Length: 246
Ligand SMILES: [Zn+2]
Ligand SMILES: [Zn+2]
Image 1 (spheres, protein in one colour):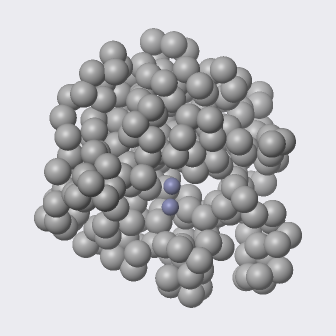
Image 2: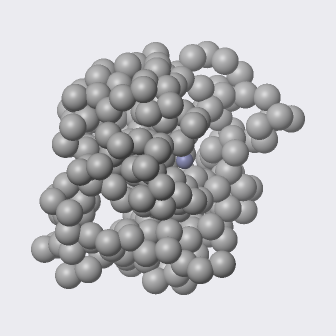
């Protein structure tokens, strides 16, 4: 079967995310865009992803609990957990590594956790757009401990990416599919970074606004509609990227 998946979506919990992007609204937009699977991946938090997953279960949409982690190397990695319980357990271990630096709402906006009824549950006080005190290797170990999967984000980007901040593709992530920014073609990325040739490259929307959800997504050829099957399809090249016009 084919699974149309957008595995990189920010909610209102991300400092840069739109206030309209509540878990409920994200799920409704994804359904309207005919996506089969999404991942909510806020910066250094899974809390709204948990609510989106609960609402997705009510509405028949597969919502993966994810998080766009920022490692101590200032590199962004999509961490995708197999189920909400694993995501909660993973997050309870990762959160203490977030520096105790307060968010400045006037600059970044409020970081709000919102439930499935669009009610604000709490406001995250620590600035989420910060580096965890976890290296790439330490974070990978933590994700694997909870049965999760890693897709390095926007690897060719000049900001917060493997190639910009680390300067190379580390051997421990050799089996990971790599995300290219939604606004870049694979050929342009490979021309700029020849080390990307031969790697599995895919695309997500990295949506910070509802209207951006599904602007780019990836269609995976899978045996079953699970995150593990989608990841295996990514690793073995059984997918294609779809870009929406306009
Ligand atoms: Zn990022
Ligand atoms: Zn992002």
